[in-house]
Image 1: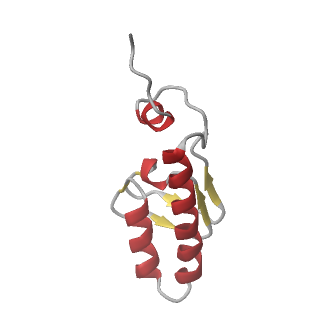
Image 2 (image 1 turned 90 degrees about the horizontal axis):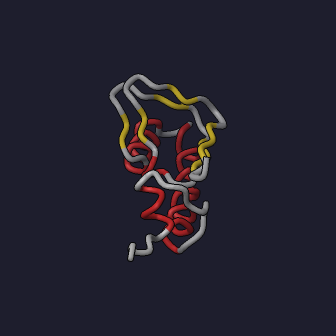
Length: 97
């Protein structure tokens, strides 16, 4: 018999999963969205601090990546941004997308 995987485990394995279903996925969303709001509020006064928060929130960020807030993410730790990538204002990434 195959083990029953959580929706998070399915997502990480690249399998079909139910978006925001299960405690791990709900927690990822509720913890990531306030950080996005904090980045937006911080950006105009302290861009280095805003960039630090982005680097901590995302799974990985390549050298030279840049952004303009606001950002809207569900599962920040699952997003990997390559070197020299620019994501513009109103960047939206949903975990189920």
